[in-house]
Every structure is written in C-alpha cells, then in structure tokens.
Image (tube, rainbow over all chains, first blue to last red; front, side):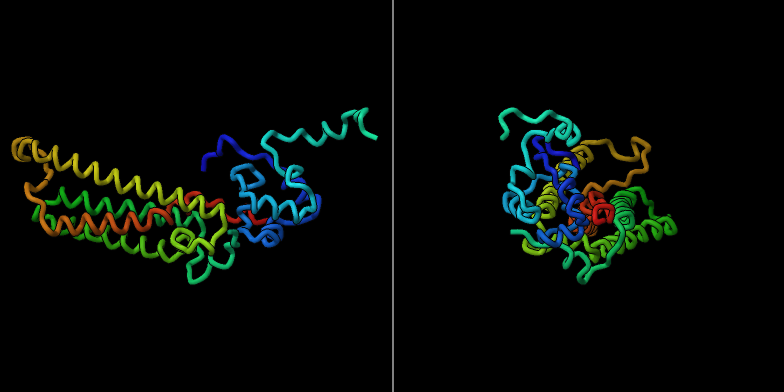
Length: 88
Length: 170
C-alpha cells in the first residue's frame, strides 16, 4: 500500500523495545491485529485518537511523547546534545 | 471502535498463506475472463478446444470459491467490530477498487459493443473473431458469472496482495 503523505511519526518501536514487548503482546494490550503494530511502527498507518491514547497508556507516557506531526530527532543526537541552560 | 482481528482471521476459514491466496486470485480472475473471451474465438468444430476453454471456467470458479473460504473473506466482508481500525481502512480501499473495477468493466463492455456493431463482418476482414450480432442469453449469463465471481473475490484478493504475512507479528 502507498505510504500516506501526511504520516504521523511515532516512537512505538523504541518504547516497545525498551519495555521488552513483542508486537503480538502489544497488539493484545491495545486490542488490534499484530500486523497493525507493524504498520504503525513503519509509519504506514496513522492511528485514531483512541488507539493513540491506548498506546500511550500502555507505555505510561503522554501522547505527544509517542506521536508527532514532525519527525522525532534521532535518539543519539538527543543523548549527545548539551543540557539546556533553562533546565533546573 | 477497536477490535483485535486475531479471533476472526482464522475462524471458519482456510488459513492460506498470502502467496497461495495471491496465486488463487490470479488463477480465478485470469481463468474466468480467459474463458469468457476465448469463447468468442471458438469455431463450431473445435470440440477439444471448447473443452479446454470450458475447463477454464471450472478452474476460475473453483479458485474463487477457495479464495472466498480463506481468512481474507472474513476481513473483506466481516462486520466492523470484528476487525481493527487499520483493517477497516484497508478493507474500504479494497472495496473502492472493486467498485472501480465493475465500473470499468461496464464502460469497456459498452465500448466493445459499440465498436463491434460498427465493425465490418468477420468474413470481410478475415478475422476468426466470432462476435455475434445479437447478444444471446447464454452470453449474458456467462458475462454475469464472470462479473459476479470476479467482483465478489476481488476485495479478498486485494487484501491478500496487501498482506505482509507473519513478518509483522514477531
């Protein structure tokens, strides 16, 4: 299937790997087909608000930590960036 | 509303691999249209060839029936609450393509009928095409059989072609 032009970017694969979950287990937790998790991770499918909220609840993070309209910066860049002067 | 699909995908269905289902879809649609179109080229004394062409119809219908017994039928024609939101979106696209297919078949059939009615007689052109001047009841029945089975099996066939198999489930 063609990739949608206005794809929603996400960190599902990152959080799923960090939690040690398989796609099948995550799919059961949010009540979808395991293939749907794969489509989400590749950005081939943009989820509904309901599914996005369910995924965020499973990972215990806000929705905007998991999904974004803009591409997420690479994790390596974030880790190597100097700490912000505004942070306490 | 979300609903996991794992319960429906194999319920009362043949769990064929995507590759097998794709082959069935090609055999089904190809055989049925091949049967319908090749009949126009048959001459009365070609009994052996007529049997081969007739076998194409059986092959096409059989392949359609098998395809319609697979898990893709459940996804293509199942109830909304039995599949998840992505599968519903994919199913809707498959049905839109099937609708376009039917519309194009109607348009092309109309064009062929118009062109055939204005073309010179086959004897004058030397062509072996036996296109009748009047559409018979049998020809219309054949057309409806082809249209019915190909249209009914097209959404499951499209879903089989879009299926990524088990690669996503690990």
